[in-house]
Image (tube, rainbow over all chains, first blue to last red; front, top):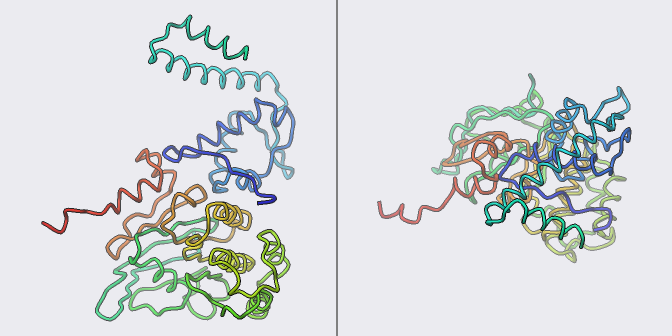
Length: 125
Length: 239
């Protein structure tokens, strides 16, 4: 349908709150919204994600507490100007994905070296 | 704290059959609540009582502090689970009816959504598919500026693509000072937009809880929790 996009996909057996925090963090560390950029309003983000606005509000407030997002009175929410902080978040997001992969590799019987080789192979394709 | 809806000790009987027996709950402003129970357990009855389309046999309902009656009809926008217009009627006449009948109706907004969903104003309602007729009714309902929206099975005949579009429309039109009650058994389509769920079991409130809390506590989606709660007891009849 014109003007309607697919909403985000969630694992509904876990609270959506944490998944929204993770997804918005990715929006920031990926540069979709760069340092100092204005973020969509709670309503716009809720519609985009297909989630309840109160849940979205809670997730954005949590990101504010962590410093990744800053609120400017009357003008909305922005990504922090602190690019070192964004870099930290980028690193921890990558670290988490790497930990998940390593856990899988271990359960599949691979050594760490073999797992790293596979990452290099995948990266070169 | 003032509630949008306050229901106290609701009792409703059809003849000798008790449908609701001491149902109480409150709904805060700015929340979207799912009303869920298997077919035939009183969802539509609750909605109709709040909409003042049925009389209660006991208890009390207040909306925005006022007892249910003609005055509350002006602040409640109700999408019934049955057809409202005859099939010979044109779409534009349905829009005109809403414009004349409801002071808070925004005809411009309504026309915008009719275009979005490609519903021609000169089409006869009977020429629209069942699903599109439901979308038309939902558009009319959401184009009012009410305090409470009662949506009785808004998705029942709608295909998955339009279901998502409808859920998006509900989110877009959601106002912070209003509340929405959506009665449905299609929980997987709406669970992400709900604040709370209200489940009715054996004529009473079985649970009224935050959907996020249900996910946290049970490790299940609302849809799975619902299915588990109302699982058919295949061997129950033998006991």
